[in-house]
Picture 1: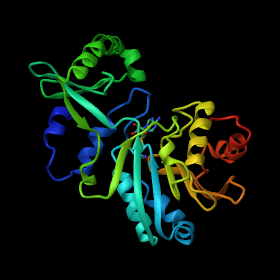
Picture 2 (picture 1 turned 90 degrees about the horizontal axis):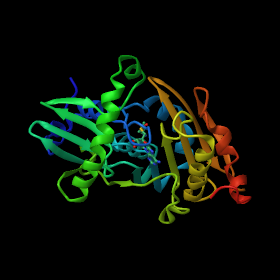
Picture 3 (picture 1 turned 120 degrees about the vertical axis):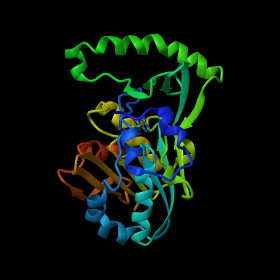
Length: 288
Ligand SMILES: C[S@@+](CC[C@H](N)C(=O)[O-])C[C@H]1O[C@@H](n2cnc3c(N)ncnc32)[C@H](O)[C@@H]1O
């Protein structure tokens, strides 16, 4: 039985139960079709694979950006990994969806929604019910009540949130408490001027996927990442995970400002070609 958002957030302040936390957040699908899915220690083999290259390049103080960080759990692990390689990382994790709201609709009925009123989970009589539609729902016809509930509730949720009649919550890991990591809302498709030429190490894990976004959109994200990289020698890790299998590429920004492949895991990143053409496209003003 799925834990309700109300129950989950009412335990704020309790010691972090990472497995339970991940199970809860991983069940949430965002408005743009991405999931909050993350798992503790999911990148252990990725870190082991790339450790020698990272150790040789990232030493002492360095600025780190984790894009699509979800709850920040694996961002903490990234910071630990970099420290183990001899770095002193200052870490920023970004995600498009961090703030959310609990809205009571009737006795025993509440909704977890994003700030725009998009339902993420329903809570009915202590049972958590997913708000998103999956393929099987089209077969069982469960798609109809789900779509109806969303379109009918969304304006109401949006009004209640705007009127302050909701409990604001943050979709972040309790393990972040006491960590020197900033988790901030940011859209990788919108250029953030304060990030320009700032980061020595950038990770985009399970976010820049062809299954989520079309190549034209991904080119925009990659151009932003390019602009956020400090300069020659900066590293970019792009990885996609399927169960215990990872396909990823570690890139280094070369002296000419082009990303170059340093190493791969699995089959390499599925967007490797788009990353390799990034600097040239930016120079020619094709992407902004
Ligand atoms: C599958 S999770 C990946 C979490 C973590 N990086 C990992 O691999 O365990 C994808 C995350 O990307 C976030 N996201 C979706 N669209 C985004 C965007 N345009 N900019 C930044 N983050 C985004 C989602 O909210 C979600 O938390």
